[in-house]
Image (cartoon, rainbow over all chains, first blue to last red; front, top):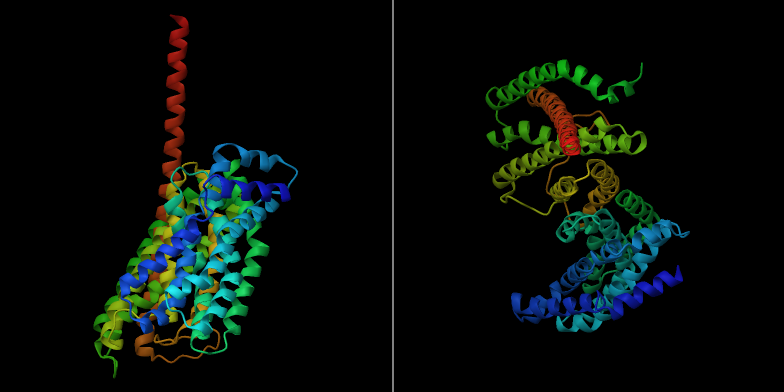
Length: 218
Length: 255
């Protein structure tokens, strides 16, 4: 499992894959939004938590079809399926690798990029907390979506359609936590609810993911 | 005798053959009675005026939008557990119906909301969760369309339906947390048995709701029968094609 994780990370970093791409997308979004809505600091401060969350979600979405597609095309996925490693484990490791290359950089990058959006200082802590707790769920759900569409030639757009409704609760609680933080309220309740969603996703969705993979490989 | 004998497509076609006209007639009668009674023979509401009459379309379609997804969930589970093809095809046939019901509920709600709330759309928990349900239906149908191997498509859409149901439920209660509601509560709470709607309005509404249930069943039977026939046709075409190719090969071998 460690070897698989290392292989995926090396592939992502060296082969010009998803690593950094998500972060660059996030940066561009944070630059574009002020152009779109105007440079008024108050307005930016008010929408910053929400925009950052939506940006993180879209950046995450961007790299989803890479999770299984290349492995499926060159046959690695078949090898993994016949290896002694359970497919559920493969699914978990794939999500973890995706999170390490997308979710983690986004979480770390949100605080400096938030400054571009004039985010209130109180909100930064809650935003980073929320992203740290929420992006694992985004990666795991995304892996499930990628497993559903792995056999398709043009799965990219379909993935967005399948995965975005599933992202709804996570986004809702994450953005709510950041908004409450910005207003100086206590944000633990939405954070706890979101952590619950993340924990449930991490625990249960790999089973659905591996079931979908088996159906696609049959 | 068990319910599973209807999993046999031949048996299903036979039974649904006489059920389809029956339910079509029932649906026509109930929907027509409910809507005509509701639109023309009920008094105006003392506050909402005649706009209240859209309830005879709005509530039944919303009811079937949710129950359609529930029916797909059950059918998907049956397909995953017992692998009856009729079940998978019924789920496939139910999805567009549920989508249309969701759209009707959203549209009539918008038309009703404009004079009552002063806006076509508000980010109210009920409205939002219906919009999310709409997205789930879209994704489900798109996945069916995208995969060519029918059995794989049935498998994957069933898994999506299962996971989607959990997330749809989660979203339904998450949006409560997110924004205050503008939509009124139910007038016919099933759990407590009480009712805050007068019989004058309730009886045509109930008839209309029954009519929509029958309509859904009739269209569902029709859709499933079409899917079964389409699959039979494809199997026949494949067999013909194989026979032709083997004939040609035999000719080649003889010459």
